[in-house]
Length: 259
Image (tube, rainbow, N blue to C red; front, top):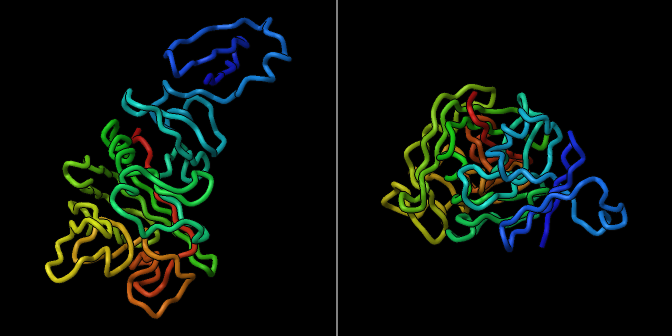
């Protein structure tokens, strides 16, 4: 199946055939009738990140294709507006439509809808953070319309062999720091207990998937509980913003290459 890119500068159409890894150029004489049968989108395999796309003039938020390390291309959602733009979003919660209480393989490969709620996948997250030095931004909103954020100047996620171990530091923002405490922890899901709690399985106890310590100051992949909840710490929680008994309305986690 072929995908097409129409270049802005010289109106050349390029067809990229995934089956043969072959590019064929057609000049502008290709009939409009023929062009109507082609699927046209901006083909960005040569661009490593949303940051690079932004620098190249792509300033509309939406779904793009990037290739951070020369491997398999990744479809991602790029936030080209917030905090200067150029962010690759890897987590989004906004309406509770997607179940986030899932197993290791789901978090490894990713799930959800890039135009709605999703987790991009731990393998992809490792690729994004290994290819470049990146910073992390976390955008949060509660059900009362209060919006806040946290940024971290250094962010990295290891590969699966190291259980997607987290490294994060350099907080600034308005949300309070509920992430640094999780640095150097391995990722846990309900079927893989990699936390440091000897008494119980944090992922099962708090119904999420995260870099649990023993157990958490943030739980953004927890249950979507619509604001205040009686249960303790099992919602979409960011402790330093609304505590362990308030589940947030909207969260976005995103990375950007450091300039």
